[in-house]
Length: 570
View (cartoon, rainbow, N blue to C red):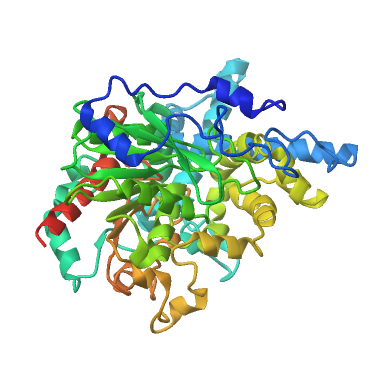
C-alpha cells in the first residue's frame, strides 16, 4: 500500500472474505462463538463510522521532503541509507562463509608455500593467477581474523582457539572478542524447583524436546549464531498455508486481523488453542509461523495468528500505529479467543522475536488478569534496554532490518503522519538511521510521546520496571511486574543470538542470573537457554532446510502439552 492515492474504498475493493462454506461444522461453531466478521468493519455501507479522521494525514508514503534543505542533505541522506546496509551485507557473508574460506584458503597458501614459487614462476605467472593469489590471501586472512576474534566464535569453540586481538578501551588490554558480550551462563533449563506446579510441568516435558545439541539432532556443520540465523532464513523450505481471516475490533476503535488455521478435520476442543504473535516485519506468512501452523493443525490444534496493528496491508485510521510497548491488542485477542474455550481446553500464547517481547511484557504486566493459560516467548528479550548497547547487531544485522522497517513501514506506509509529528532534524535523523535502535530513538520515541529510548525500551520490557542498579542489589523490590506472573512463561533463547543479546534474558552474575531470576515472585518464569541456535533458527540435521523450524516449534508445543497435562492432574 505505498500508493499515495490510497483510499479505504480501493482497499475494500481488493479484499476477498474467506469462504466458510467448505469448513467443517466444528470450525463453523468456533467462528460463531468468536463472533467476528469476515469483512473488514470499515468496508461496506454498514461501516460504524467514517474511515477518515479530520486532522489525521492520509495513509501512504512520505510525500513531503522539506527536511532536505540543501544538496548536501540529499547526499548525506542517500549515503547514510545505503552504505551501512552494503557494508553489513558484505561483512555478514564473510562471517557466514569464513569457516569454509579460512581453512580452504590457508590450505591453498600452505600448499603454495610447500611447493615453492621460483623467480621464473613469478615472472611467467599471468595476471589472473596473481589476482587469484592476492584474493586468496586477503580472504584467508580476513576469515581467520573473524574466526579467531569474533565473540560468537569464541562462544562456540572456546577462548583457547582465539587470539588476543580485540582491544578493550576500558581496561587497556586485549580480550577474547567483545568482553561486554562474553557469556559465562551455562545452557539448560532454569526454573523454580520450589514451585510444585512448575516441577510437575517439567516432569511431563521430555528432555529430548527441550535439548538442542548434536546428540539430539542439531545441525553439526553450521558454526555460530550468524549461520544458524541466516541460513535457515535463506534456505528453509516453506509451505504456504491457507488461513481463514476474521477482523478484530480493538479498544481504541482500530481494527486488526486474526488469521485462523484450522485442522483438516475441524476445530477440536480437546486440543490446545494457540494465539501466535509474529515478528516485526512479518505476519501470518512468516516462514516459521506457517511452519508452526502446519505442524500444530496436523496434530488437531487450531492456530490463530494476530496480525499486529497496521502491519502487512492492514490500515489504521488514527495516529496510533504499531509500536513494541503496546500490549492491549494482545489482551483483546486473548480475551476474544478465551470465550470460545470449552471444558478444560487451554489457550497458549507463542511469540517470535518482537512478538515474543510483546508476549512476555503482556504476561508480566497483566498478572492475574492474563487471559492466557501458558506462554512461550522465542528469541525475544525480557529487558530490551541492554539491546541499545548491542553494537555487534547494530553494525552487522540491523542495517538491513532498519532499511526495510523505515522504507516499507515508517515512511513507506505512514510517512505523512510521521512527518506531521517529527521536527525537520528528527526527520533527517530518521532517514539516516543505520540500525533499528536509531529508528526507535529518532522516530518511534518522538512519534509516540516516550521520553527517550530508555523509557521506550523500559515500557516494552517485562523487566523494564527494574532499575539497572537494582540487579546488583541483594533482592528485587516488591511489586516488580515479573514477580506477579500468574501463568507459566517459558523464554527460549539462544546464547549465540546475533540479533537479541543474551543480556536481555540473563547476566553472568547477580539477580539477573537465570538461577536467581527464575526464583523471583510466583516462580512461574522458566528460561530455556541453548548454547547455539541463533535468532529464530535452531536448525536440525545435515539438511536442515528439510526440517525447517521443527526444534523451536516442537519445543513450544511440548511445553504447552506439559502445561495441559499438569493442569488436568490438578
